[in-house]
Amino acid sequence: MHKTRVMEIGGRSVSAEWEQVDQFTYRLIDPDDQQMQIPRCHGHWPGRLAPIPVAVIFDVGINSPDWRLRVRRGDSYKAYGCFADLPTAKRFATEEVAKGSGVRRKALAA
Image 1 (cartoon, rainbow, N blue to C red):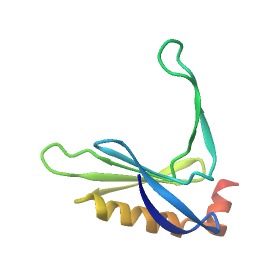
Image 2: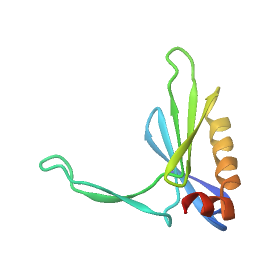
Image 3: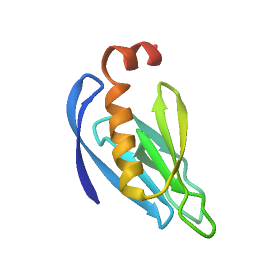
């Protein structure tokens, strides 16, 4: 996992990390943030707790890269799109997460 320093998430400095889900999807997770319960499926996988992603980046391009971005705001995600390359999408995601932190983010969660 590629670790990135993201300043001021939830009013504090945290070390968030980019987790590659598959070749087309990346999640920015804060290991200290909320967790969701993934239910077990008998005979397939056990249940587990997983961090709720702060941001998700995924490629929807067929012939050329077309990266889309979703940033968590409270209980929902805000959509951004059409990034030509992954590093630009990741940089934009970390900036948006930092912008939506602190008092504004707490108000959205309430």
